[in-house]
Image (cartoon, rainbow, N blue to C red; front, side, top):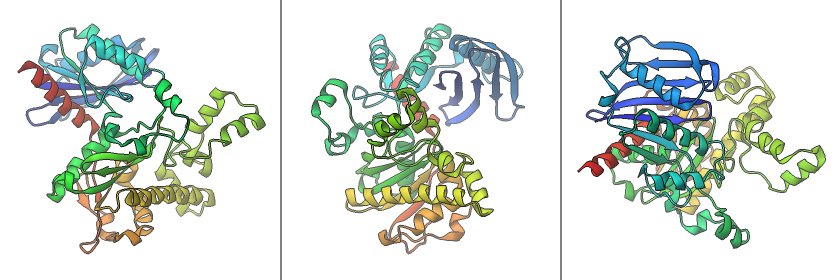
Length: 402
């Protein structure tokens, strides 16, 4: 079976085509600037030259058609025809309380996703455009939706409820949902396999550290608590997001600066975090480089960032009454030895001992960076959300066809 994985944004579409026989990537790519006359299509088939084209792509239907054309092209394509693509899996940011696992796309499923537009107005409508675009181009191909929030549906109500009037939960489903669930689920499984231990026997803290960042406490193989909340704004300090702050700051600043709701929302999501404190960038690599050159604001941004990661690790160790494994994943977590060192050196009270030589090794494989004597194992686990989406899609479609 060949599975096409799609992550549709409002003006972009990323894709990977998998052969599920050996879980190899046959091709990957992206369509950027959808809706413009200068859209950019990048197609990357392993073993062949990359292809970049600029053309007019005004909607997602045309974008998906362009992807199919790339995949089936006689020179840089990887399949003879569209008929070789057996299923399509979609990343969906928000599944609310309805979706506790991945699901085959039906009219009912599409209707439920539409009901969640208010909870993820920047993401779910774009994902729906991706689903509809595939339907228009590949009407007989089954589609599966995989939700960022599904993994966190195992959280107890002590973790997901906010201490505000319960009527807001009953009427509007105001609660913690959490995100990056596909990543946290993938790396926790991968780590347990690497350690040769049952996932259910381990207390894990997974740190997905990228431009967006979240920490998750994983108890008995299930999400027990997670730092992102009803939206991805809560929790850790991030590249451009504030993370946790006193909610009274919002009306106070709105009044003092005469800001609209839209403006304060933009401030907290796009103009805060590392970018706001450093005054330089939201990119950890640029922050570290400036810090090494003596920039005090970059140093402050880095210290605030790593302090909050340590704080969440300590909180989740308390919540689970211990921790066996700490995981670092995503762009920054996988690649920044400086960040990992700063975090680990501040949690030695848990029994964490960092091996600096191991920490400095760069690799795309799972690796342990703690010492052999460390009471807590610390692992770097490269995430692969697309592969998990492909696996779920394969399993569901295969189950439907049996």
